[in-house]
Length: 440
Image 1 (cartoon, one colour):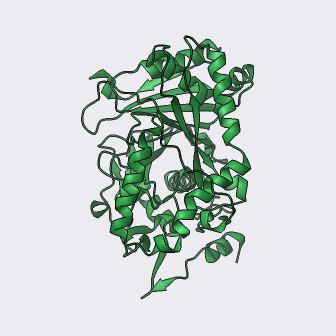
Image 2: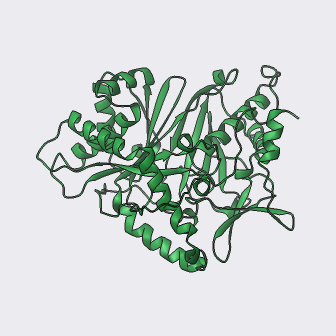
Image 3: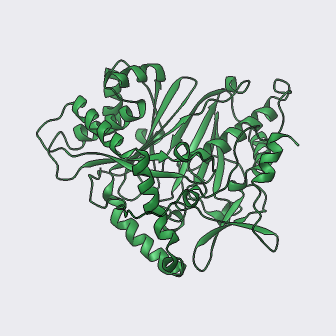
């Protein structure tokens, strides 16, 4: 038995009832079934654009072959007396279809073989859309890469004849709840997420269920130079530039009693040596409060860098993890019926939903290994809207190009334009692409 087969055997769930495997939701996942609606789907998208048109039959076959080897995605959601839980879904894989709705649409599980993800295609593009209760971007990336590998083996049997039709050797398929595993009781009682109101970007909205999309393609080498000029990492630089764009285009450079607060997901796996396919991240907020008449671009970047550095420390991340898990492990709260828990979760979420202006996430490098990489043009990621956040950003890189994608339910493009203009003025070549809602 080789290394990969051993990994698959070790990650098989052993908790069974009448031969049906089940699993708990991770700490973060418990939120999403409670707050998900058609208007707030909690579905993210990761896409790859190939250098050739997608064959739907091959893509369906690839999905049928890959899905049995990825236990996290073979789940359906069930409601118990005290908690939601996952149960093995033994139905056939969901049907691959041509894209027909806007990105991040609500996943109606009863019309999707009870799976919590969908795979669609459009011309050269393959889209994976995932309900966040299943996994975060880390798990989504693994799934999409394996799907693309298998698709390319089927689409190019002669060129890729030496490749094996199975999950890549060396990837991790852990299904542990890393929140609970790394939760340590402490005498400290750290505060939870802030609920103080932040700036909400408002304005004329697009049509119902419509989403505006703007992609910006930028060479990573040039972005590094621009970020280094301000003593920032690429991620800090992009977040700070977005904050400044909101300050200039939405606040018009005016003083505000409420801060611009940009929510930034932090992957906890590197801090705890975890490789779980379940969610394992926490949120920090890059905050800038305009308290004087005028701030320069450089000043705002410095403020955002300091805000992120102060929060992204092992100690602070551990405190956030502790706060998130402590309520779940409280014995009394565990005995509260699900219907009451849901009411409480909705109330807490509603109180904190306007604490952030937007979310920006970076899911990292998505380069494929050779010989597959030559068939791929680029990847991109996209977030759906949530309460209080009408504009969001997501970025990833492939083949030396960073793709920054704005998703928005607003008709105005002022913030997006300012964002890319600021970066272009630093000497970065920026190519822009939008979807059709801005041309109707």
